Image (cartoon, rainbow, N blue to C red):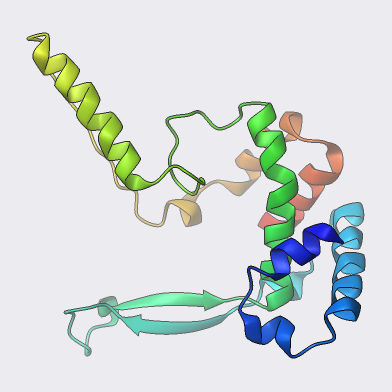
Length: 172
């Protein structure tokens, strides 16, 4: 239940201030443990409400001027965060994610990646060598990932229950 308390406190105060916190956390703990045990992420938790926000300085009459934002159910967001607290130690322990991977990692901000690149360029130039670089920006990268292939690659990395839950989360 401690995990649930910790994660619940990261949610907007309106969520837990208006509920009987102890009962809610017990129920959420039960639900989350069932999700972990069965390896099934409920399909209705994946249904989001989409809102659009106009990008600054863009014309309001063009569709491409809007950024879509997906609002997922609160239990979905809470479960994702709880699952991440269990997944991160495994990723760290097995060194699954290389140190030079900066996206979506704590204490790996963009500015630190800029410093790494700048330092590498400076070292090469100071040693009077050539420096080349290629920078790729893959739009909608997550949407273009071959999920079935990703699931297969993850199989040997995680215990069966975690792998089953990841598969359930990514499918359908």
